Image 1 (cartoon, helix red, strand yellow):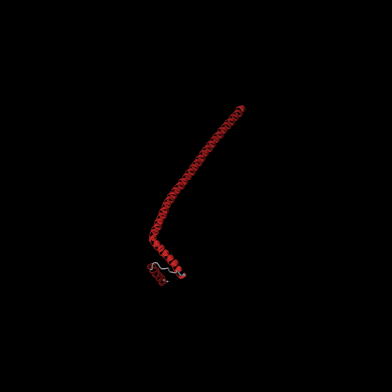
Image 2: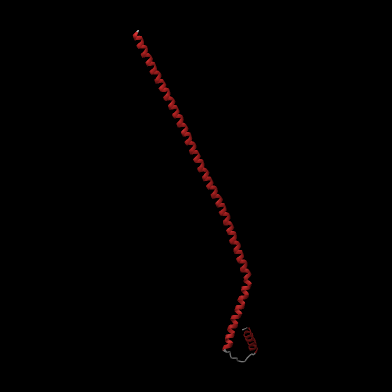
Length: 152
């Protein structure tokens, strides 16, 4: 293939040197001209690709660094958000425990007050019973005294 292309190039150079004479273009020469044009286009594109490959590589690397940086920032925000959420949750739990302790304290104090009231009521009831027993005792004493005085 390379030999054929080189031979056609030499033919083109020789044809260009022959001036003023008509030369017939055969189908073979037309096909080789088209093939040579495509080959040169391909070589130019390959050279351009080689020259842009380092730039593309740098661009890909820069894009990768950018994506990594964005991911790191997101991770930092997530960590901050997680820490804030944990702090809020612990504050909520502490508040809940404080309220529960306050309720337990209130319940305990209420029970203590109720026990004190019950003790006071029992004491008052005993004193009342004692007073009634004294009155009954005095009545009986008076009746016995009256009966004894009445017999004399």
